[in-house]
Image 1: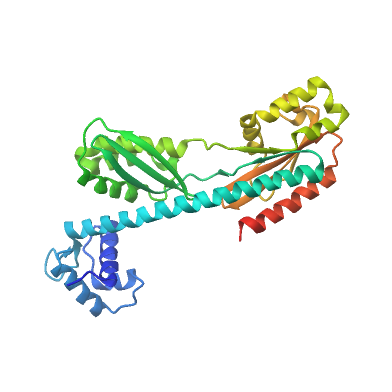
Image 2 (image 1 turned 90 degrees about the horizontal axis):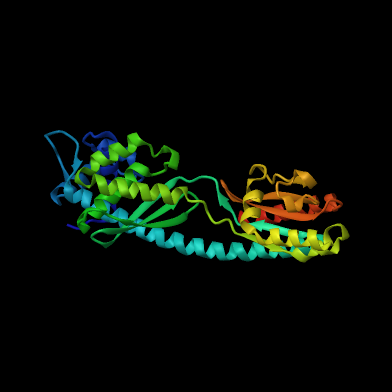
Amino acid sequence: MDMDERKLKILQAIIQNYMETGEPVGSRTISKYTDLNLSSATIRNEMSDLEDMGYILQPHTSAGRIPSDKGYRLYVDTMLEKKDREVADIKDLFLEKTDKLETVLKQVARLLSENTNYTTLVSKPKYEHKKVKFTQLSMVNETQLLVIIVIEGNIVKDKFVNLTEPIEESQVPQINFLLNTALDGLDLTEINMALIHKMKEQAGQYAGVVGVILDAIAAAVAEEDDYVMITSGATNILKYPELSDKEKATKLLSILEEKDTLSHWINASGDDTDHNIQVYIGDESPVEAMKDCSVVTATYHIDEGVYGKIGIVGPKRMDYEKVVGTLENTMKQLDAIFKK
């Protein structure tokens, strides 16, 4: 007897329902739980086959079924195979999108500096939400694991974890299953001591391993992303006499090289609602070297909770109407590109 797709879906539904309720699962429950549109009688026949194959058990007469160890094993292996594919697909997609995104943002920076005759700053996007989608453990050796974490926005992070005690390779899928069951959809702030204690209890003799892995996941999710800043038209500031004397020009050009400082300021300015155009005039800028300048910033959106900033730097006598209008038009074009 072969395990076909229909049987596998029914087995998955039994396991998921049993994990949620802790109660034996009957055919009527499965008929509502799956998208197979099968009758209870058909499902009973499939469940009988699954029992004969050793994937589910009937704890007592007239009761529903519960998964066997063999059933759990197939479920975990199938899940991990699917997650492996998802990780690979997400990495490929993310690299492709990143390359495309950087090209677009560089073009935007160049065009804005050319159209306005001012200096343009464009930050790569930041990610507001840091919820865990799933994790994948890979064994490097008996005392080291590679932990791959996918967070909301399909951002892939990884950490190597050194273990204080050796672990058998056969235990890795079970630990991975525990992690995914407990952490799916949780924000970093929701991974609290009570949850950690519960997971360690469930891990039994591998409580220490789970603790180390959770520390690695928390560190990876909490990491500040490297908010790369793209600049264009830096020398445009030399066109304006009030900014072109040697001392002021040197300070301005130097601060434009300090991309971390600019990135954190630009990304922190205002909020991420709509396009959020903000104008900072002279002393309103927190950057000392820009006290003789004006800076106009706007927000572009790629996805919910994924956004970046564009800033235009010029003299205080800049053409504000033209700059704001150009930024509004640019934001609309970026929306059309990113939200296709």
